[in-house]
Image (cartoon, rainbow, N blue to C red; front, side, top):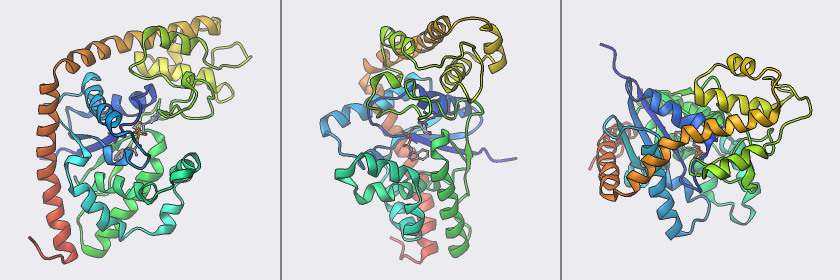
Length: 331
Ligand code: TYM
């Protein structure tokens, strides 16, 4: 019998989850939960590469876990946990860091972008961030990593790190494949459709957050930047409209062609309002689930404690092998 594939992914608890996070990643996480062994992590240690207010950070971390559950991830089928609860992530980061070249890390575009944005805090964690990400993935012998397109470079580095280790010390890690949605791997900013939609955009109108109120969603969508072509078409020359069609299609399951043909000859105003309504409708059960889970902190605690326990066991198996391969004396 073929063994079930292992899936790992995560999001950084900063700010709040966006529609880009959902369409690019979480939607696929849910789709994979029946046929695979899935681990979904709140990568809280990654968030520390930017200074966080401890009290606020604590709340955001718990809110992220609750948002994972509210978006439909089943805690019985998936291992859902906090990265910081499984210390092997940090241990493997050290070991893999000793096999990763400074030149490789220097090429990471996200490091360049983030150092540009946080000029007063270009810390070494920001630089070695992709090694922690490689450790997250390799620790569980992951086969598939469902992510948005912006993670491609980090995934390629992870594959290189895994292959290099296997070559030097013998077959230890699976070399993981990236799993990205055909449509929606890069949801764009509503204000500058040449940029990706981001949790940390300074322009609040650029991003739809899953927790936004219905009024806010309608307002943001009405203000979404389009163009002067006045034609609903899915093409690169009209990035704003293309992005809205992508969102509409991803949330309704209609094909791009169906969306375009349904709106043939219609104006941008009506299309923006309808897209806002699609988002609002889609988020209604999410918000209800979120509220219900928030009223049940014991359940939430049970999910992450059980998740950490299971992840710990798997992680320790891999680390025992890694330590042995490297010649470290076993405990
Ligand atoms: P993060 O927290 O920035 O984003 C979480 C997931 O959402 C995807 N995503 C998007 N997809 C489509 N359009 C967008 N505008 C958009 N914005 C974000 C991201 O690609 C990601 O899949 N480094 C990672 C977290 C991480 C991780 C891992 C992921 C740490 N370790 C191991 C996978 C495996 C990050 O910062 O994602």
